[in-house]
Image (cartoon, rainbow, N blue to C red; front, side, top):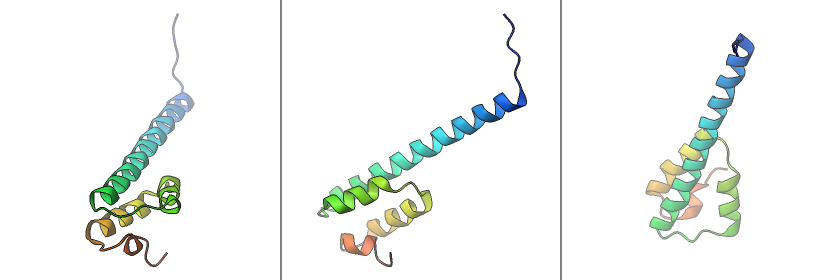
Length: 81
């Protein structure tokens, strides 16, 4: 049996792979942020946990991670939002 590849099929496969990578990256960022909060001994409310887990924007997650590294409180991580 011979399988013929089409440009459409190749494009769909690439998009699926890229979306999977983005989802994996977002999940890793969420996990890193929650782990950093625990390491810093920040009290994570259910509201904060839900906010972090709902975030799918990589730039926002990077901002929060950078802030969490130096913040003296969890409120500083989410300042100006």
